[in-house]
Image (cartoon, rainbow, N blue to C red; front, side, top):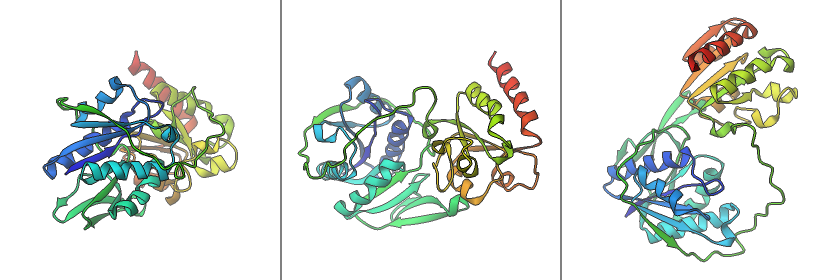
Length: 322
């Protein structure tokens, strides 16, 4: 019996998200008195794989196959289920990102496993197996009991600390047979952003709403994000108006993010927007309307004109960095 954690990689490299998953899996394994097996799919150097051992993975399984070069949820769920059976895994942990949301349901059917989606804490109990998750756009929480023999958990991003441990891991190269009929996804073209931090990867996000009044006023907001080493985002009305690209839209109908710090500038705080950023550890709101709903969700708030406040914030950050 073991805890199996699928660790996604990006161009052969792991990100903080992968180490967060292994740290979480390691703590779950302690609760049920078992070990952690980390699964990596794709071509990755041993020097990168071994990093998973620093966070509690006892065994690291590396799977390479030409049919797995492109992420296809059907093919990947087939491979993960095969490894889970070989490792006799009672708990499988995946990230609650787009990949996890695509793979977990297929995996659930293959393994007849119950799913706890978007969990943000360690299980509350192991008998019965009970997990904690936020619901209703972060306004409530639920305790979900999973009764199946095999459990699948998808972990909300940035909800668990990294825990380094003694590295006693081993790497095992494993060959799996992949049904070519399952790998049907084709990539026609790839466009990569190289000039800024991806919104979903950012620890700090500076976001603007209609309170910015005009796309011409976005320069100080972008500068603040740059000096903080963060990413920029926006509310849906802003992207709908064409002030900012749709890829920056956060909210229920946009990107769901969970940075350490989310600075909302000129955003009223509609329920749909809060649904996309409720996982943020700290929310700072800047708005000239003291009755704006965003202040109810924020840990810190500043009432005032953003165009006067932003330059002062930028200068303060620059002073701290000297």
